[in-house]
Image 1: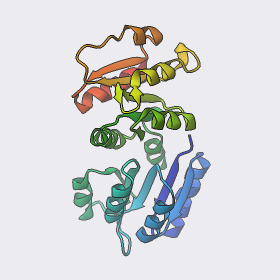
Image 2: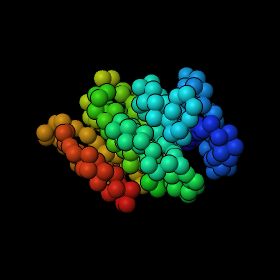
Image 3: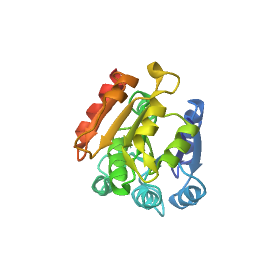
Image 4: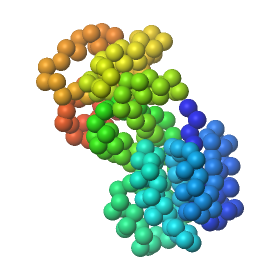
Length: 242
């Protein structure tokens, strides 16, 4: 999967250098030298990650990610600053939308690990409850995961056709069908041994899980709604470690 990253900094040399490093690592990097230019770039396309300096003339980094998040809550937003005591840091923390604040000069290995996510994990959330999907996505992005969201079976299949996720988090009841059908497809990709692991979310009190366990032993975790964020994180760790 190609990861699109927007680097925003009024220091053109730094922005270009970071974009070059990200390109060398196989990502698709774009640059903007002001908050205004970044907003225009985001109108033209979706970015998986936005890495922006906090202190810039005009629109600062905190205002920028606030406005970008309103338009595209699925992106992950990373801030960078050379000022550890910057008063804007408290504002950024209160927003709850910045995945991390990275000190300048950047440690490139740290930046790359955050873009790849934990062990390079790329998650697909399939949930028709828009508010729940957004809340789950924000929590996981804050943990460093790359997250995509689909609200229907059709959207999920289109996302999977573009690139297969590391793990899928799927609701059972969806507007255009049963999530179980999608789970079967994921588990049977390239055979049960190498199918896509799944976290199944359901509000159904009684649920027959035997068939899915037979399809991919160890490749599925079950969560009953409502569940705590830590329960989802634990399920993901179990799947990635299996």
